[in-house]
Image (cartoon, rainbow, N blue to C red; front, top):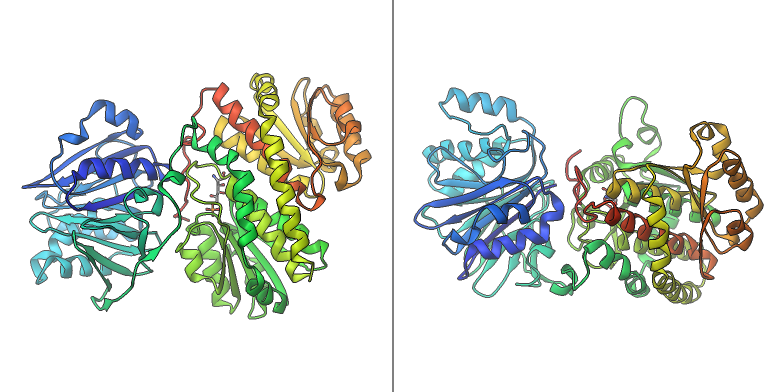
Amino acid sequence: MCGIVGYIGNKKASLVVLEALKNVEYRGYDSAGIAVLNSSIQIIKDVGKLAEIEKKHNFSSLEGTIGMGHTRWATHGGVNSMNAHPHTDESGEICLVHNGIIENFQTLREKLQKAGCKFRSETDTELMAHLISLELKKAKDFKGAFLSALQKIEGSFSFVVMHKGEQKLYGARKSSPLIIGVGKNEMFFASDMPAVLSHTRDFVFLQENEAAEITKEGYEIYSLSGAKISRAPTHVDWTPQMAQKEGYAHFMIKEISEQQNSIRNVLATDVTSAAKLLKKSKYISIIACGTSYHAALLFKLRLANYGFRSDVVIGSEYSTPPGSLQAQVVDKNTVVVAISQSGETADTLSAVRFAKTKGARIIGITNVIGSSLSREADSCIYTGAGPEISVVATKSFTSQVAILYMLAAVCAGENINEIKEKIRDLSAVIEAVISKDKEINDISAELSKHEDFFFIGRGAAHPVAMEGALKLKEITYLHAEAYAAGELKHGPLSLLEEGIPVIVIAPQNAGNVFKIISSIKECNARGAFIVGISDSDAVLEECNLKFKMPDCPTLFEAIAYTIPLQLLAYHMAIKLDKDPDKPRNLAKSVTVE
Ligand code: M6R
């Protein structure tokens, strides 16, 4: 939800932290700030994206080799510079950044105010600085004060904390990610790996209810009660370039363009142990949010194709009373497949934890090594798409779907080599679609004159239509809805007015081409403007604008047909002068429920 970073070493901390913050800015970008420790703690913070703040303030004026920074996605308190992080206690000697929500904020704030603390912001975060300061009066050292303050707060957090006079940074996490980057004579705290990949590829993943301290030379991990924990770093094969734009105008178009390669990474993935677990289940329950939810819907259809029954539930609805279906049916014979690019989505994790209390076993599908989902699952499959920086999911979705299809196929005893051959063919199809980007760009020129959009498809093309509509909404702020094509006549047709664009996703192998043609005719009769994405000439003849899809392995059509929709949303965002990487009000990783 927010991006946090800490640095201790020999370099100028403000510059290291600034660069690292730019790499996690996708986690939140309504305000940002940096604090550096020297003879005192100096802070620069303001409202806006980092690039805007940099124009107004000179971060490099902050001298020192110990620093921390934050990019905010507001929860408690409006978007203004007082609420921006870092926050300090009244003495200005304790300074911290925070990601998460302190749930007993109101009670604690009142207690602290009674004890004489003067608050300068409306945030829940600031109280932690005051709380540590009060604890420091009783504790024997700063670490003790930090730990006892942590024990008094409820909710989710990752913190990085500095204390004047100490050549150390402290950190802690609960239900919100925090990792340690291990360098040579320098150490880092960060919300996730892309923040500091240009400095190190060795990471220690803090686990639930753990705290840590870093010095230039090393790190120490302990439980919230202070017991030491030993953990070696993990070396990751992500490269710094993977987290850079590498000449592309935006991460989104870079990540769309990478898909012909990222999909091939799936070939190296072993799904056998997850498949064994899945086959043993009596009930398959699939959980996800947003784009991952669309991958889940495709997985359900594929499982059904092989004769396996499953349900898909949106993470936030999983245990919502009253009468949550899942509360009734999930038990020790259930296998949950939880899908999350980040592996940190609070709604998905909370559903997973609920299912665990019912005895269910968990298969996690995630893109982020060491993420909460990877640790909490009984069996984890990494999607291997590489870092995805743009807030909108693109390559992670296509990798998720490919992995899930492989998983379903292995469960059904299909020949995995044949599936892998089709993934190689799919990679060539993706390349062919991307090479026709100019055609999509031309279509986007026409469509960017409109404000409402229908996306329709049948069968597996329906979740693809949902994904296309979500992409468009997220980054153009235009209204788009997806429908199962056959459902139009049961209500949504009343919304159709002269000229409204209807984007039709219609692979002919999906069968029933005549049915999708009927849906097109229904829309045409009401004056809609039809955009066809299809390999069928019969479909395209009915359309005002056409994108002819290359031949594609039937199994993977859903993936191939998603690519033009990603490109369409991207080009429309550019034409409408919107930033596709950082859409308003959104953050890449939603770590609050
Ligand atoms: O990291 P996750 O896959 O769990 O994220 C779920 C959604 O928040 C995410 O897919 C969101 O919908 C994206 N912005 C979609 O582009």
